[in-house]
Image 1 (cartoon, rainbow, N blue to C red):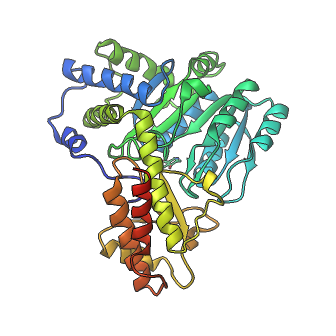
Image 2 (tube, rainbow, N blue to C red):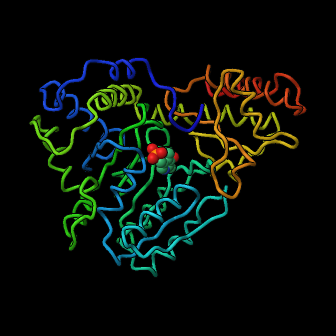
Image 3 (tube, rainbow, N blue to C red):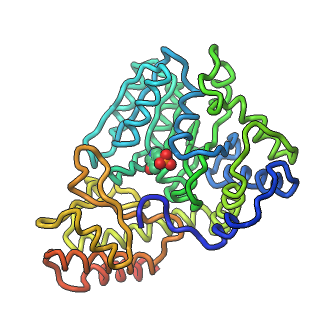
Length: 382
Ligand SMILES: *Cc1c(COP(=O)(O)O)cnc(C)c1O
């Protein structure tokens, strides 16, 4: 129950263990082409160009930055924490002039503050972290992306801890790049960087005056490959992670069979059950209010008298949790991921394990209150 890698479906794991096909075998071309089409559907981005490249989420971030900014161009980073800092670092590394709109850890970005920065900034791109994995904050992505669009600024949304878990309508909202990695709500072991890029962003990339500095991260190398796989033709730039792509196709198929709205709703329901349990235990969340709290993970302060040792106690109960990540608060909180195949059984097992570990660590609460609160919420939600 960590915010990635998450639990994976057995069918996805079977695809990973199957015999490895040639990257130009007709049957693999079919699978890769279908995975690309499915990625477009998962991001609700019928007009976007999908990219699947071997690497982690950080490579997906780097692909966006390396292709969309040229030295001296201006970028606005909506900074909510750890991975927004990484985005700013990447932008700086590629020569962008970076301005940041920051908020305190646990707070969501202020749309009006971003809007006024956009109005005065002559920015080429704005980046925002959909779910900040270091704080558990869900950013108001729709209004932010729409604001960027109104100011003619390209929007890059880091969805690594959100894509296929949090509501997102790329085309309808006008987001230019949605990027993620395989190991979070997409439900595939680590190793794939995934992006869907709008026609407007592709045009901005085509209009570059300077070459992309990284060869491996150049969309110019990958575009013909993605187009060929979708068209059913063999092609080669750099060997794809064949088995991971097969596993991706299986997982995206499962996601689409569940349906995007149903999947978003399930993530919201499970998150609500977790929140009811945390409240019953008297735990305080990092996000300052319910409306800015993510549905893909919980970030919780250790209660009075309890420290990070409790994570090991929870692990003894068979549930793996994550420690803190935000540099300012790292030692004061822990995180529980609830993405991908998470259901009522996972909620009750995890909440029960946290409850037992906290009580064993000396936290005072009535045995069973957390499980009862989660169960009541699960029953309420139907
Ligand atoms: C996990 C994560 C990343 C980094 O992904 P890696 O696969 O670890 O490189 C980037 N952004 C967010 C929001 C994340 O949660």
